[in-house]
Length: 353
Image (cartoon, rainbow, N blue to C red; front, top):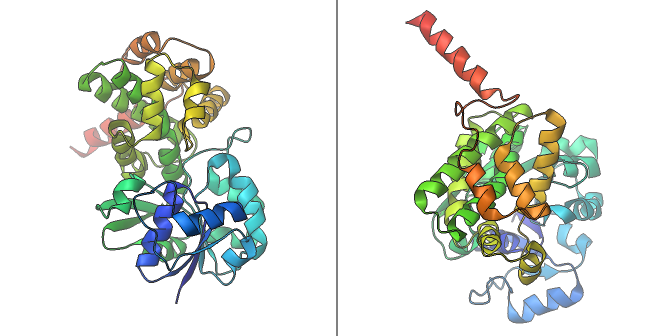
């Protein structure tokens, strides 16, 4: 029997543990403390109080017990605690252990993606075992057995295929990809767009405005992705566009909720303190803003969300700028590669016609 450790009792960690347990895999779900582990054993998950967890899931607060002899470890923790958690888990990772990041965030300070954080903390011999899981994944829908699709990416395609086989169940289809950068950035940066879409909804702007926010924002994060080495097509797939649609449209999205509440005039700190889960878009906006500054990259959408979050800018005024202030060609921006790519394509077509 395969054995998998899920690090983190987040909504997504609990969901993945449930999916794999129902598949007949031995699952160890790691909780931060003995108190938390005992509470889940007795009362179930706080994330899904109305959905009982499979009795077969082994819940423990001991890292060595969670990772003993496992085939894979899934890290479903907030980005802010990824380094701490993988550092604790690294001593139990073996040469055949698949390491799956299920976190959609970036590290403040280093501006690193989660796979990079993991690589920092484990033996370099095991770097080929790292992969990332992303896509439109609203945990509650999946816990209710509603169909969904995701993508798992690794630099080593054998690792990606192993993770795909492990994670795929009847109503959860997992595709593979070799573009780790694109898949991770799509999963992280789309949360910035969800904040903007939430602001649009909170202001009552309607679907036309929200569609403009989503598409302009997607173009912008695609430009950043390309600047960092991602394949732009990845940002049009499940980890990019697919996740954008879900998080910008669904009331289940935490980042969308934050945007709605900001539009109502609530202070960010008050909103975050009232939430039981992490809205990764807040920290990701800070990281994306820093990266844009370093790269000299024009990111007006991200800039305005940054101003709302960290400089107390009025959401309504910021939204008007995001709607198209200083409009120009939709593929053009300072140091974007999208427009040059478009022009090269036109020249190629001209030669072949």
